[in-house]
Amino acid sequence: LGRLAQMIEESEAVSASEFFRTRFSRVTSPVAKRICDRAKVSTRANVRKLDRSHAEKLYQSIQQTKISPPATDCICPIGEDLILKGLHQVVPGEFYAAATRPPSVYRGNPFQIEVGLAYGGTAPTQNVSEELLLELLEETDTRTIRQFLIHTFNGLGSEAADKLVKAASLKTRQNPSKLKPKERQNLFVAMKKVNVSEGQQMEVLRYANRVPLQFQQSACAVTQTVLGTNWRGYGLSQSRGAMPKGPVSLMVHIASVWVPFTSESKEAIANYPEIQKEIRLGLQAVGRKLGMYLRRRLKVKQQSDRREIFLRYLKEVSTAVSDINGTKRDSLYEQLVRVAKKHTSEADMKLDDRGRPIDDKPEDLNLGDNVLIVDPSTHKAAINRVAVDEEESTEE
Image 1 (cartoon, rainbow, N blue to C red):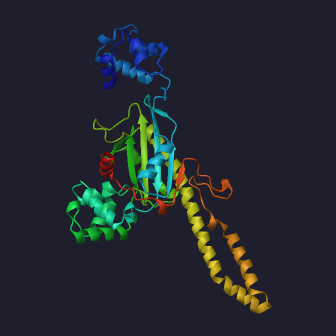
Image 2 (cartoon, rainbow, N blue to C red; image 1 turned 30 degrees about the horizontal axis):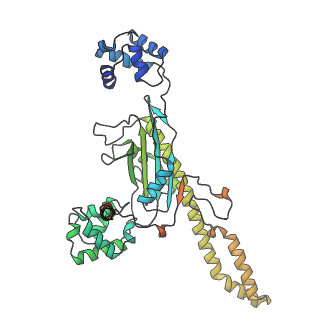
Image 3 (spheres, helix red, strand yellow; image 1 turned 180 degrees about the vertical axis):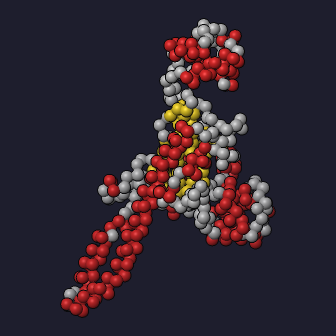
């Protein structure tokens, strides 16, 4: 109502009919006439003479009038390819998936939901040499060691930073550039030995029109929808009413001409059923792909363990059979090995970067085009050295 009153006050239209036709999407003259008739306002009424009482009547009339959904071609989503590239560059992982939902409408406002997911990978702190760590400590302008770890190493959350600080016997508010040699050595050892992924909770990154939302996470519709999703069906462990556990980073982006924030500070997205539904469908889309990948990986591991057991006893079996009936032991052993490899052929399965089996039937596992699978051992440490890079480019 307040927004409608403001639009009426700022409008340059001459008549009420012109106001609705020019300021609202897909409102034709017949629709504008129905709105005005229900509110008992003339279509030729001067907009500048409409007061608060007229705005209330028009607002109620709009709610009761059937209006075509607004155009959705005005929304600018990020796109699945850019989401995959961005996550791969920032968040260390071995599996990436993205999903862009079709445009939808809430209370007459078009919006679109995009979801990206990154799973697994080696923490960037474990790929850093001692020399590089010393350089980073000298170059950083952060005030505390906790801030240094969070802002320098992409994908390292606050919980993981606290683990490293505690393992290194440091204080969270220590200045990183003033650490003593012994403290620097303790930090390097902790970065190599501490498993920051153990007990790690899902990290949720929220965006609205490409702008990150950093505060009031619990009050946001994105967080509440993530908590309400059953992630156990996708291979993750999750307690009731809690975030799923695992090395998972989740990115949710809402693109809209009018993002419904909970307050003027624009820190959290309001809970509208239409928005929560689209977020849930996007989460389920990337969750299904993650579940397929984890189940396939588990099956490959099971078949590999099964093959190892077979190969462990085949020599003894071939020797025993040879002693009983005189069969050539080496020939029998080779035949048994071929049979064992045939029955555990899935242990040799390899996937390309789009999740499709290499030299295998593509229908066995089709994760779609919006999936990226990488070798975690080849992933470089994601380190923020923007200031250093800028200085080097300036000198050149």
